Structure formats: C-alpha cells, structure tokens
Figure (cartoon, protein in one colour):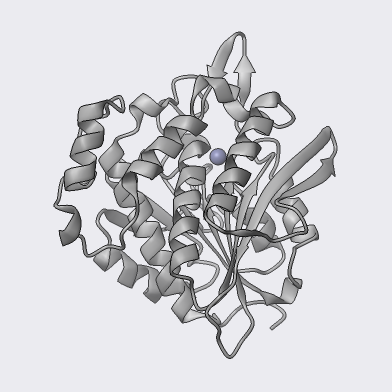
Length: 311
Ligand SMILES: [Zn+2]
C-alpha cells in the first residue's frame, strides 16, 4: 500500500483485507484493530496536538486522549491516578500509566511497556507532528494495551506513556525512580520509539546486553510479517550505531533491567516538520505493531530471564 491519506477507500480496504493486503482472517499474526490503530495515529499526529511538546497544551490534550482511551479499555491506573506528574530541571512533566493484571505465574514479575508521547512542538511557526517519532509507538502501545486487556499476559503488564523523552528521558527516569510496583518485580522493559516507517525492516535491540533474549527474538524474526533484525545495541559501535542510550529503555538498562527496544532506522523526516501521518505506510505500520505484539507474548512466556541484576 502506498503512503496515503486516510481516505474512506483506504479505510474500507483496510477493513476488508487488512492493512498488509492479505485477507484479515488468514493472518497468522495476532489480531489487532488496524482501523483503530490508524485513527489513533492520525489523532496523535494531528496539527491540533501541536507537536506534543513537554509542558504545552498539546501535551495536555494528548494526556487526556490517552487517559480516556485507557479507561474505555477498562485499564486501571498503575498509580492512584492515571497521570503521574514529576518535576525535572526545566519544569513539570506527566506520565500516563496503566496496569493490566497478569493471569498468574509462580513468580510475581512485571513487564513494563514504554512509549514516549512528547515531541518537539512548534518551532518557527511550524508544527513538528512527530508521526513516526513517536505517535507511532504511542498508538501501537495503546492498541497493544487493548489487546492485552482482553487477553492478558501471564505476567502483570504496565503501560507507561512517558513524557519528556526528547529532553533526556525525563519521564522514563521518573518511572524508574518511583515505579508503581516494587522495583525488584520489574523483569523486562519493552520500549517502542519510531515503529511506523520501517521500509520493511524493524530493529530489535537489547540482546547484546542480555544474551538470553537472542534465541527468543530470532524465533520471533522467523515468524514476523516483516524483516526483524537484531542489533543497534553493541558498545563500541560507530557513532550513532549503538542505540543503547537513545531512548526510554536507557534508564531501565542503567539500573540492570533487561530491555528490548523496537524501532526503525532514522529517515529523512526524522526530527523534521515533515514527519507527518501522510508519510506513514499503513501496511508497514500494521505489520510492525503485529510483530511487536507477537514479541511481547513470547517474551512474557520466557520470563524470568537469566541476567536480571538483583534477582
Ligand atoms: Zn522518539
């Protein structure tokens, strides 16, 4: 499917055939509501969200949208309220955090899924909509949350929509500093940041630091409806090639929590006002989210991982 505006014909085609062009019922990958996914992406990346800059009215509107969507999916707040405000060097930020109880295991481990909702806002009169960065990860996490609410993982799952990533991972740091469950229960972080513009290739990072992840992710790659590559996590790689400290998984990694980071290569619209909804290939995005949901389910079954510091 070509990058295209979300027109009625596109919606109908997606509804009838699935966004990857195959009959929806023939999908081996898990079901998800691709229409809802794409509509959420179009809302988050809309000009009225004004680029979702930390501390801005657009960020407030984004939080209201996310909190309402979680409530509608019967997902409860992980803290006393859905919003978790925090102070950082240049002001306030606020994470939106929900929790889905697991179906139960011998252990009491928790999987933390993260996606940052903030982006660059308005600059010189231009809106930086950040459709790929990171409306894509937020829409993906929202739809994955709905799927997990109706068919939970074995382990309890936290959905953390974090603020202030673009100014140094402040929201994920605030989460790690004051998690809603005892820190020792956090077994794994799965972080989604820029998951739409795959051009056919999605990356999964983290196995270099936690080798037990490698066979799990390789098995996922064999089943995935796109090319899933492992890497971008190796210390000493050329500048820009090691993404270990590039997004919200970094604060988890720093304190010894294994992570899996799903994301795409930088592209020409990265951190440009042209990172718009219209440039997202709807089929690529849907295939990416299906892969990530499959990954979360296989990772859940593999816990606990050897190598979690402190356990
Ligand atoms: Zn980002």
